[in-house]
Image (cartoon, rainbow, N blue to C red; front, side, top):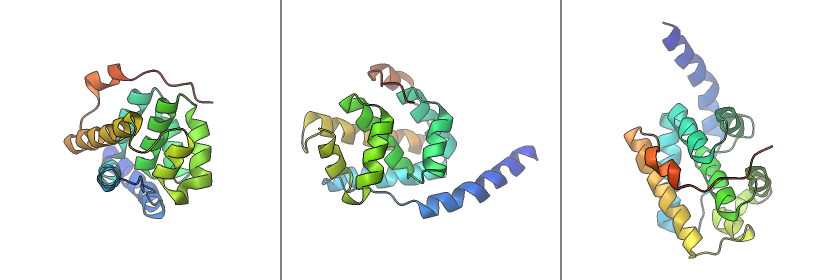
Length: 158
């Protein structure tokens, strides 16, 4: 009964947030955009697994991810892109979040370029591959396991 009540509360408070939050995508690569759209759908299906996965993968507290989604109204796939971009360019995620809030209408292709990731570069293709992998993990309802060991450490968040 307690679980049902918790789920109902979560659904009532979180679902409106998802409907108000739109995914930016627009990477300049239609396949990459589709991976992000699919990831967004999968994350909304099980936000707890999504939050846990990102928390493990990027060594960030789950409440930071929840705050970005709920308070900052950032779509789950955009949260993934913020942390992935921060890791690739070796900058704090808060700095990427600032760029996101300022430039999100221009899309991730533009924002990545602003952060030093060139279209078609190995870093760009790595981001695309990780978005695809993240989406597949979410579809399977899995965490990252060995995948987290391959990640380089991110700068600490404030």
